[in-house]
Image 1 (cartoon, rainbow, N blue to C red):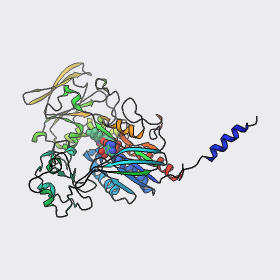
Image 2: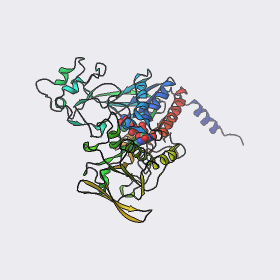
Image 3: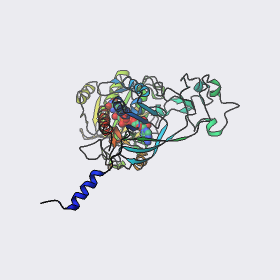
Length: 454
Ligand SMILES: Cc1cc2nc3c(=O)[nH]c(=O)nc-3n(C[C@H](O)[C@H](O)[C@H](O)COP(=O)(O)OP(=O)(O)OC[C@H]3O[C@@H](n4cnc5c(N)ncnc54)[C@H](O)[C@@H]3O)c2cc1C
């Protein structure tokens, strides 16, 4: 059957559709391991990358970890060289202390508005000597967020020694000069800085950039253990979250790697799995995928550093699905660590000790176990502000709150052409899966950018 004249007209019209040039730049939002990996892969292919990170340094959660399962590699030994590479790469423009506030346009030509917060320190002039922090009148008085409040910092600070960019930043909420317009006769930090890097005249700035594709790599938040009040988190100082325990173990952390909450070495340590994961009472039905293994790793670190400690892991079931995970779990089991099936119902205090109470579902009997330290395997949840980013980007989320992929078998693309996902913003995952997905997002980005027109 021949085609009608109308069909020919429509086809000719479609052929005539103007092709627009693709801006050969990728915008990457979030500079944890996912955003860094995606940026490096795209930049190494010769495309320009604008990497936007809202914190004063790049690195994300991986920078807070001590060792990584299942190999027990030192986290910062893997991460620091990548951070330096990102900071020095000629094709990567790094914007820290910045956030994307608006996106218009479409694949090939996105117009992005970015808000840059004032750092009150000139990035190019700062030599990271630290004299400003020593001189600060708020010296070591402010809880350090990077150390989860276990360590202290000044109002002018560097989040951690390997931070990139290697520059100090002033916290506007605790700096008297920024918050109250006055800090003695003259701010002591400015006087101490021979490089003249302190600059209280800096103001918030808004910049507009263009990019052909966008990679979203905004990561996760730790589940707030206060939502499980039965575990006494924030009530008892020796009940810690997973990331707090990582900072306690870290050689560059607030205790130089000594596992000594409140300055005392614990001899009885209990780990509790699935805190905020697989738990309908807090609305999280999903498994956070990393907690079984990071608890095994943390229990191993206790055994290594406190050989005579009594260590118990309370679990629902053990999920050791990744390469080398089952072998690692076997190894930890052989380190004289008791695995008790059944998550506790309550933690309370008796004298100086914590008491963990629950039911052992293998033995079918209730138990009470005394502890000096309890570590909660806090799960991974969507970022608190994930809804705002989703709105700005025009993305949707799955019922668990993580960003929605295009299809279940295609976890990188989104429903919006030219916007890709990488890392835990799409769902909980370990570092190796995060890196693999980030490289995938970079690859799909490069295919789009290499087209030249769309
Ligand atoms: C206690 C604990 C221990 C763990 N141990 C291990 C381990 O041993 N081995 C392992 O494989 N995995 C481990 N994990 C998992 C590991 O942390 C993650 O796989 C990894 O950090 C995910 O990286 P990411 O880049 O996706 O997210 P993140 O590390 O969360 O990075 C996201 C980045 O995006 C930035 N960001 C967020 N929102 C915005 C925004 N709106 N604009 C700009 N920037 C934004 C954030 O500031 C951050 O820098 C552990 C997790 C926990 C909780």
